[in-house]
Amino acid sequence: MKKLLLSVSLLAVSLVASAQVSFTFNEAWSGTRLSYVPTTLDYDGGSDTDFKGLSLEYFKGFGIIEDMPVFLEVGAGLEWLNWNDSEKQGDDDYSVSIKQSMNIFSLDIPANVGYKFALQDNITIMPYVGLKARLNLLAKRSYSYKLDAPGDDYDQDNSESVSMFDEDKVGKQTLKRFLLGWQIGATATYNQYSFSISYGSCFTDEIINGIDDCSFGGTTISVGYTF
View 1 (cartoon, rainbow, N blue to C red):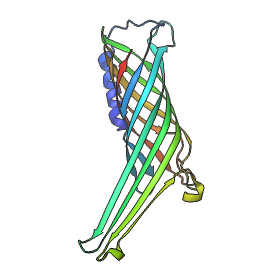
View 2 (cartoon, rainbow, N blue to C red; view 1 turned 90 degrees about the vertical axis):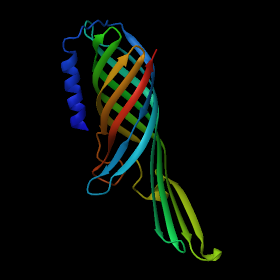
View 3 (tube, rainbow, N blue to C red; view 1 turned 180 degrees about the vertical axis):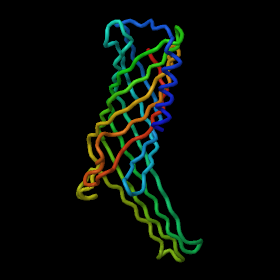
View 4 (tube, rainbow, N blue to C red; view 1 turned 135 degrees about the vertical axis):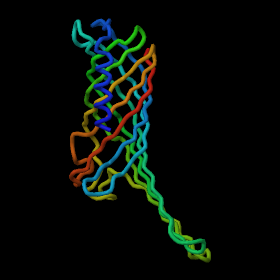
């Protein structure tokens, strides 16, 4: 994915190298953005955990260098990540079902610097690079175990949900509250509509306390509306 984004960025730059730039230093915009956020919790030497995710963000952009189309775009949004896994063993007479899930809700604050090109009067593209702070607000891990066997007395159904911040429940391997990461991508706009793709990861390799070489990152695909 990193190579793909780099190729897309280089292609975008080559396509717009001859485009007319007609932006002013005082130009500013704001808007909302809905994103699909597939994210991987990558354990070095272990199994990866692939989350599906959604985020809703408010953003604002404005010029930062006079006489150049260089812009700073900052925002704030809420993100939800979800992971599910299930397994069933046995047959119709005797079976064991195990289900696990994780849900993480966070407040994200991105800040990107980009160079905006005008392809036409109503079409622009802005490659960017930036930082993103993540504050994990809520993180739950749920587990359910169900045993089906002949006779009602042998059926068992147990479930438990714990906070991933609760050291009494999960031990010292708690999820970190604050994470700081980087991202690189590009945003294309048509009139008031935008489409973005980016890749990002965290600077630290210890997303979960006590587990080294555990990284958190992935691709973000967004659609937005500017007003």
